[in-house]
Image (cartoon, rainbow, N blue to C red; front, side, top):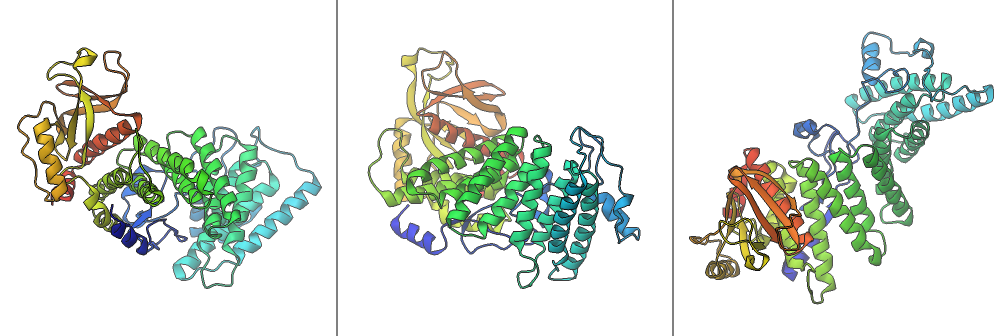
Length: 501
């Protein structure tokens, strides 16, 4: 990427995480490249038009029974009760105290202390007023719910389910604080929510939902503090809670994505000597999220943004690059691949469109990816290692193609001229068409030469290749999987338009 292009990007804001406070509407920066927080714990929610630009993924109040003990009344039940004409809660109507192993018998002194804590939290909630009629109606429901959860906790301080749900109410109330209002501080509500999550997780250490939403609350508090030491400590706390949430529930791409975003924010505050390590950790979290859900466009986009930031940092430091070190131009190209894939999956997202306009020229047009892989002789899957040759491959919306040395020169000239003309490949030795792909994975078969093995299983049999490095292999795996995912979602025409248009 040229210096002028980098300066232009910086003038437009560079790469900045999205800082939205209200989950009901978007509050996007003018930056063409911005990180995206997830919208919900259910992947199907990703398709909701109303949730497209939420920055947080708060899990809904649990509707199912807990594994241990009696289920606490849920938000849905409270809403039904409110609609049925019982707007003034009477705590004694609630369920009997839970007989779960986490139940606690409290002394009169502890009960009095709990009542005082509850009253302080209720004062915060009662002081919140929405900015419009919808906000006021929403806050009325939240206040009703908070009173019920407070009553449940007073009777049984060990009711971790009620503590968790009450923390969610406090967190939602913080979102409902009007920016121009003199009501309770959003930070105070979030701090109180964090205390409830802390209590809930001490009572039930396996409550992964609580760790997840607790991390979101801490992240919101960190955003309010800019690039300060206090913010740094909060971001560190958030990453630890995301880590715990993932340990308890590894199959959560949303938690991994948010973990990556928290690391990305942290990397902007820590000393320069620590930055690259944290950025690489963020990259691994985004990549892990994508591997769990290949069409998770937010994580795909976020991976593109963090690579873009790494490319900018690397280009500023200058110097020469040796061995397997990745150059800034290669990082910009990798970033463009993920931005292009996110746009192909969600072509209506204006943020993705703006980012693509900035980075499309960094793609090896008219291809999505161009690079080197070791391959066996044509038609021979098991060959002596000395027969394997390193050659150039190109990937587009149609498939992966191996090209000859003569064709490599044509491609090099085409890329240098930026003409965008497709090279007429007639002597392709290996062709893997996207519709034929069954799976793509790493491979450690002993018949392969030493290195980062790649297996592309197709309806016609497996194709074995070896990448230059494990880092290079990650790029090929992601690119091929993304191209196939785009094809499987019926969006190949959008990808074709990006790289050929």
